[in-house]
Image (cartoon, rainbow, N blue to C red; front, side):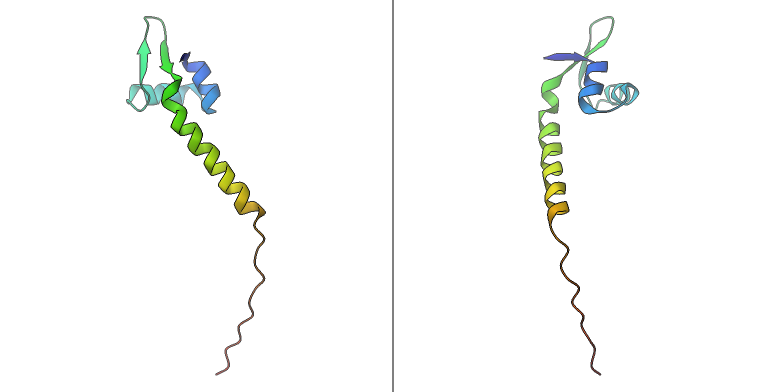
Length: 76
C-alpha cells in the first residue's frame, strides 16, 4: 500500500521534513508521481516490529524490581 509523505510521517511519528530528508538521501524508497512522493508502507514492517520489541523490553525492565543493595564490608 502506498502512502503520502504526510501519512508516513504520522505512521512513523516523525516530522514530514525528516521523511523528505530520508527520501532524498535514499534511506526511504519512494516513487514520485509528478505531484508528490508515494512511499510503499511495506518497507517499514521490520521497523514497526523492532519498535514493538523495544517497547516490550522497556516494560520488562521497568517492572523488574531493583535488587537490594548488598552491603559488603571490607575487613582488612
